[in-house]
Image (cartoon, rainbow, N blue to C red; front, side, top):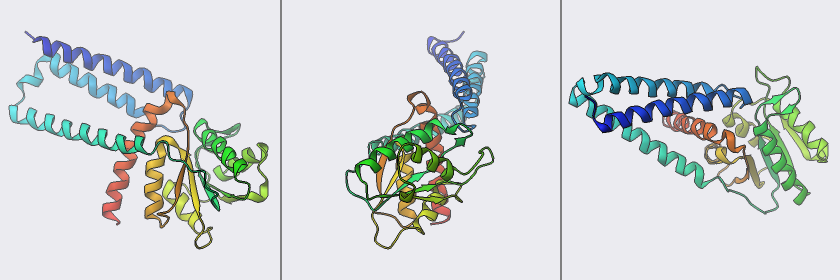
Length: 254
C-alpha cells in the first residue's frame, strides 16, 4: 500500500505533466519562433514516467544507493537551475540614459508579415532610445535563417524606417546566425574606443553581455527590452540551457 507521501508525489507528477503539455501546446500554437516547445513535452513525459515509477512501486524497489544518487543529481540540477535563473533575473532591468555612439540590436526571427513578437520588443525599445538620442548610430545584426524570407537585419531596417528612424542612422550586419556571431561581426564595424549598447530582451540580456565581454566588448552596456509574459517561462528555461552550453564551450574554448 502506498504511503500518503507517495500518493501526493504521484499526483504532483501527473498535474505537472498535464501543465507541461498544455503550456507546450500554447507555445507551439502561438508561434514562439523556435521549436523549444518540444522540451515541455519531454518534461511531461519525464513526469509521467516518474508517476508510473511511484504508482507501480518500482521506485521503492530500486537499490537505496541508486535512489540516493538520483536524488542528489536532481538536487544539484535544481540548485544549478535556481542559480542561473537568478543571474538572468538580476540583469533583466539593465538600461542606460547615456548618449552612446552605437547601439546593437540583436536579431531574432522575421516573417513575411514582419518581425516576430520577440524582435518587435527589441525594435520598439530601440525606437525609444534612438528618438531620445538622435546622434546614436544603430547596428542591426542578423542573417537569414532557413525559416526566414530575408535577413533579420533587412526586416529590422524596414520596421525602424516605418517608425521614423532615418536610414542614414542604420547599419546592417546580415551574416550572423547566433548571438556570438552577432556581436563578433558588429565589433568589426565599431571604431576604436566607441561606446556601445546592446539591445535585447530581458531574459536574454545576461548571456548577451557575457558574450559581449568574451568577444572583446567588456564595456558594452545593456538596454533591456521587455518580452511577452506568456512566453517568459519558455524563454527562461531555454536561456538556462543556452547558458549551460555557453559555459561548457567557454571551458573548451577559453
